[in-house]
Image (cartoon, rainbow, N blue to C red; front, side, top):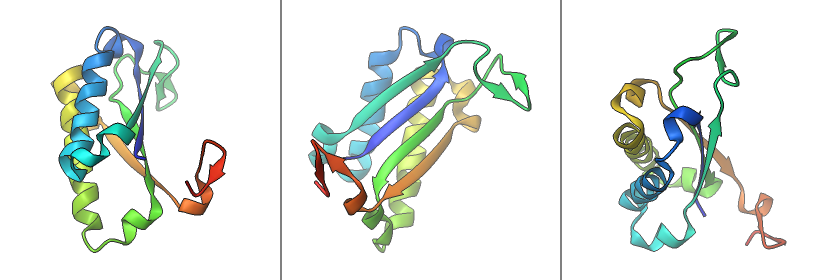
Length: 127
């Protein structure tokens, strides 16, 4: 179950939530295939001005930060670098298209891998 947590300034997100959710889901599907669509989870976290800082100062402009949760065994595949590169490119593209081109160069995508025995769904470990 791939899940994406997207942190961005509320002013960039407001009114674009549905478009961003669809674009990010489509980005993941473009890499993995249509079979993954029902399991893609997107959480949008809009931060008010003054609650995002860079260099110790509140940021008036901040490129989105994406945390992409992925199963650790996906990193053991021979094509892992290609898959992760494709995800990073398509996620960044989705953000630039929906939130604005000014965010392309600064958007970060962090892949956080978890072993299946450390993920529980519906109270069942390894589900």
